[in-house]
Each structure stands twice: as C-alpha cells, then as structure tokens.
Image (cartoon, rainbow, N blue to C red; front, side, top):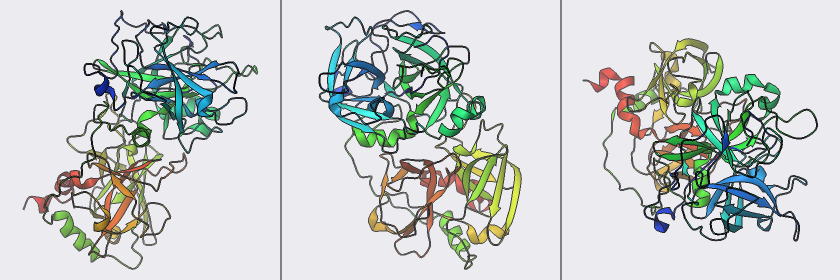
Length: 533
C-alpha cells in the first residue's frame, strides 16, 4: 500500500461480503465489525494493527507443482467459505492462462507476510475458482472473481467476514483500502497498510486521463484515489475498498487497475486515480455463485426460497388507461419505442413513454445530483422527430438521494414533459399491474429490449423481495450504449398487447425494477384528475 497516491498496473479494488453460515458458526459475531479494537486509524495512510481488518485475505500463487509460492493479491472474506477478489488475480501474469484451483491458496488472519503467527493465521486450499464469465484481461472489464475454499473457515477475533455494499453511487464517499502493495520506496510492505481514498465522479475520472480510462471505463467500475501520491499499487490488487456505515464496514470496490509508469518498470504511477470494480454491480452474480441471500443491510441471510402468496387485485386506473391507449395504436406503433435522455448534454439513459406527458426511467439518468439535473429528451420515430429541453426528474417520496445528492441507479424516476404530447399516444407503453409473482403460466410472450424477437423462451426470475426481476438475456452496457432504463415487456395470457414490467437497472446480470410497487405514486402523478375523482 503506497502511502502516496499510486495507480497500479493490474490492481483490484474493493469488495467485501458475508456468507450464509456466519450466524450459524458464531451467534454473537456480525459481519464488518472487528473484534480487536485499537485507536483511530491514520487518515492519510500507514500501517495497521493486527485484527483491525479481519476480512482481508492473502492470495498466493503456485504456478507449477514444486514451484515457489508467492504472494499475489488481496481478497475479502464474505462468508464462511467464499473470498471475493479480482478476476485478474486468478490468471498467471506471465502466460495469461487461468490458474487451476491447485495453483491458488488463501491465508486469513495474516498481518505480517514475513512473520505469520501459526496460532492465528488460517490457510485454505481452493475448491473452485469463479471468475466473472465476461472478464476481459485486455480492458479489465468485469474484473471480479470468487474463490470457494475447500472447507469452512473458523471465525475468530482475527477472521471475520465483511458486509457487502449494496449502494450503487459511492461518488464523494471516502473508502479505506488495505493491502501489502508497494510502498513509496517501491518495496512490498510486509505489514498490512491502509490508505483513505475518495470515490471520484465518473466524468472527472475520464477527464483526468482519457487514454487510460476511455478504453476501460464501464458501468461496473468506478475511480478512487488522490493525485498527491496516496493510493493503491502493485500487490494491492484484489483487495477491497471498504466503507464504514454505523459500526460496520462494507466492501464497495475491488482494486483492479491503474496507469503504469513510462520507465518500463511495470510499476504503478503515483499521480493519478485507480480503477475499482463496483461490487454492487455484481450482487446478483455473487448471490447466484455463493448461495448467499442478502437482505437490505448487506448481512448474510440464508433464507429458504418461499413462493410469495397470491394476493387478489382489482383492475386499476393503469389498466383503464392501457385500454384507452390501445385504441390509439397504428400499424407502425413500436413496442420497443424509447426516448434518449441527456443530462447536461451527456447521454445517460433511455426512457419510456407511459402517457402523453410523462416518461419513466431510472436513477441512472441523473449524471451528478438531482438538483443539478437538466434533461434533454430526444424523440425519434417515423412519425415525429423532436427534442425537449430543461426537463427535471421526479423521485418517489420514499426514495432518498445519497449523501452527496446523487440518485441511486436502481431508483425509478418520472420525467414531466410540461404538457400533453398527443403525437406520443400510439407509442405509449401499458404498465404491468399484477402484483403477484410472475410465473411461466401467466405469460404468453416476452419482448426483450435487445434485437431478440418477441416470444422468446421464458427465463425470468424474481428477487426474493419481489421488487425486481432478473433474466438470462444479459445485456452489456458498453460505454457507447447507455441503455439503462430500457424496458422489458410481457404479454399476459388472455391479452393481445404487451405491458411494461419495469426499466433496466443493472447489466450483466440483467435486472429490471418491478413497477407494481410504484403504481399508486405513478397514477397520482401522471393522471391526477382521474385519481382524485
């Protein structure tokens, strides 16, 4: 850990998680809370005390049988049997080949790499290696992996899992990164060190070094660090960037990459920001691999899968308006019609027409803060082509902004066009109003937001709380294709038209917010005269 800001060559950043067996193994133990307490941490960086970061793991490589074992990367213990790290930490850096499980082992409870206490440290071989299947070593996208240990860890004062961050927007929050990376003297630190790193706004990050970040930046990462010599460096890869909330620590990022020096040393550059994998972007994948069911606090919560009870429901105003809008459809009406949204001139999302006056999308439309947001909506079809400027997003009353004024990307927003636009009527999307679980027997057809034809095989599943759905038709949110907010539509058995279930809030794995929980607010906002009569 360089106590001067250092960007690194193949560095992973922060991610921390917790596992399903946590409370079974130790009832009194909570994730993210060290059991060994010391005085306050050093703000600008420095050495740590043993036990302060009990979830930090040391990942070692053995490139061939009988070869020398070398420390390679950091990682974060997230459950009784899984360690979160960077995907590039599971690759032989000399050959580029994926390491076998026999080429990796993990140590926990370690503070000094050169003086390991056998009474405290625990060592585990690796049962399975799970790099994210779309990891690209060329551009470091999707740089995340999970290591399944060969047996359950023993939770002690020095081995504790970290909580998992679920917040998408961490801009301006300050995280703590720990590791055994290079110091300002370009030497591997034998003692675990830390650095406090602020998360940088995406635009500021790109503008700081377009040659580096322009090719690598994507929705599943963020930048953090300083430009004064305090940052992560070679050897910190795979380690977490941790954020304290209340008494607990949450892993929010994984050390992934940084600029390298121009002297041919392949060492990290000390005057720029580093790239981190965004843990919250991969929550569904983490849950699918580990079997961890995460509740709203990021604690491990191994619950049995219980089907939601059916609830009776009556037709509502959204159903009445849907039938009304169906009468306005024309032969060239488009069930995939979308609106391009730009915030302060930068394309940020796609939106959906849900009435003559309102669009619906997600918090990803907001570039910086909701107060600064100034949208331009671009409408393009065979029948009309126009733009509307200076539009403002509207949040549900129960949704809150982040501490920095940003809008969580998984939130739902409405956009008021100022007055009715009757030319939009043929392309208005009906809303899915059935609050019950979406199952195969109630769906006749699917319209995916990609070029896949309608009626594709049913492959939809709900999150455990019923607030979102996931699909196996994963969408890649490339830099030049800002498609968050695009909808998925289903046709119910017995109906001839499609209904919008919700907007895309997450890529790779694709996740859509379910609108049924927002319908009261939507109807009161979009059709106020009808709801108050």
